[in-house]
Length: 262
Image (cartoon, rainbow, N blue to C red; front, side):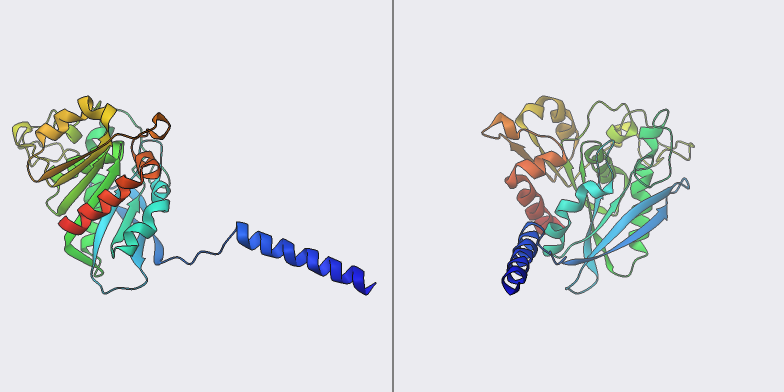
């Protein structure tokens, strides 16, 4: 009987050890808090605010913008990487996605989503833990296009990282159809089309995307930097956030750009 109990205990111990090995406990290096903020056109945006467990406030901060049909949690695998470098991060759901206010994705949708970033910046500027002169933005695909536009429209954005931006959008996100002095409250009125000057940008994309993205690079003013990736295997070709997952160089380049410029 004792031998039977011993065998049961031994099997149970191995089972527990195996579970721990398969599911290791990972200590997070950050605090996270669910927050929300209003945009200038009164849309409610849901976000998560991440701050380092260690380090002195105020923090340099990055705004993280997801892809079309994604949400803010697409950035979760990368949060620790930003935190390790001492950055706080505000990852938000674009209006119409995730837990943010639902809106039609038609009509002037692409003209007004830049206001989500305006709301994010306003929230950060009212946060005492944020270094107000060191706010950057990082986005993939649609989020990359938003980050691109933010560098032109929003003075408080010091640097933008634009990963595989969507270029097929006929919108003020690409400086199209805007003119100085617009009265439309949904459209940033501060720039004319000839004065749309994105700047302080790191472009990251695959070599196969170069032809489409080159006009955005040409339109941007200095300072700007281009990182083009040529994976050795077609199996690792990816765009947007997938590029960060599949090419280890890309996320390292992103962090170094922030270190040097934010």
